[in-house]
Image (cartoon, rainbow, N blue to C red):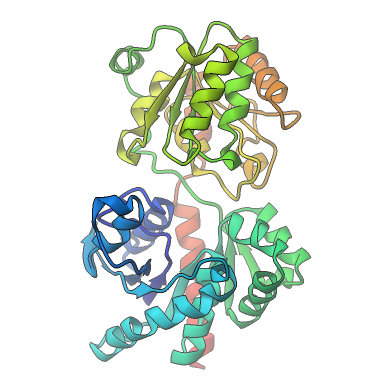
Length: 392
């Protein structure tokens, strides 16, 4: 099968960690030997790569074409518009990618289906491209693309329209499937295929060495994610007030760093909060192995890969009871879900899990149930069915 993978969430030379979960799933699919794929991963157009433009300069520095891990990737540009951009994004995205998709077809890559990731705006744009090129489309919903954008009238209508056009819909959790069903999408049209975890990349290491490398000498928890309110780092910092002997490592970058640093100083816990900055996916295992627990205090999630990545390293987790997280943290050896979404909820769960001395080997065994094999086979079966039906 020949696929065209379409998503703005895909790593590139300037943003190697951007959308790595999409690349990982695709890599396992291609590794099956039954699928080929070319990637079209549009990036916003920006006129200059001069450093004075900050993060926007990265867009200008993304190459038009690159190869990552054997995958050929194109990065066409599309316009983004302030204020009204959210409502017109699918049209601008489809327009920006149309020429590149046509070029691939002209060069002989006559793909069988479009494999689109992130429902809005990417999935909507993919549905438009599918109609234009007469190709079936499968859209994967991943979290905020549904449970956030459904609250805006225009995106909500377009999500439903794209779901009607798509020949297949994948969600990364049962909870996300239910969100689509509540929007009016037939349950039979949605196939839940949860993400897996790379059990070779994320694995137990020598804990003493990992802790020494990070200069960790006390009970340590780690929070991983962009430094934005959605990820709930502020709740974990507040929870430290009830845990005077605990060190918090925060891995991630984002606009709220200064605000979080100020909060830690205000609460008198700044000496126990360490900001690691952006940690490459390949190096996260060092952090997980050094930590005693991983805490995810997001207010919204689809399927948080970071939970399984931590468990695969032998580190149990505490997670907020949202989205697909109850499907990930579904056994005592995995960790605990918070009883309430608050700093007290964070502290209560950490203290309770700490008191029972979770078994790191059991956490690893639990994660081993989530290999990529099931997800890869489910994708192959779905794409085969859709492609045959389209040809007929």
